[in-house]
Image (cartoon, rainbow, N blue to C red; front, side, top):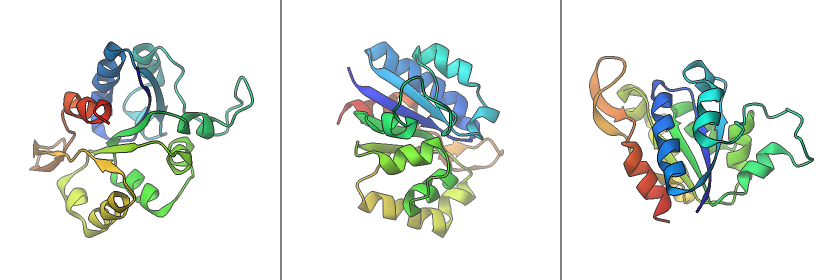
Length: 174
């Protein structure tokens, strides 16, 4: 059994993170979900709370039941997985920004970090995004690259969220 923190960001692929939670829980893993404000526009915290059987982290400044800053508590995991990862969270990670619960958790963690991007092909191919990915790879962040195919915007290209089973296998294989 692993303790996994799953960071969900504001991509249309956020609904596919529900399947990822289900796969981890089916294995017996303890999954803690942290959602950005944009992610909550696509999927509700209640969905992830029901699937994970754990409270969902949404507010960096919420008063915890016991004293331990949430981003520090979440940072203590066997793995931190960001899926789906937007270009925005990738940029925050690359440049050390910590302006919400997820980015603060990512900055505080010493655990292995996995990133499964999902975005429009133009955003994926943008030199800024690719430079940020290279920065993170040089720091040991593991990427599960997006697939090619039809994107939510109606175009064809690279940027589709990787298959949840593939992401699960990559994480549990550490």
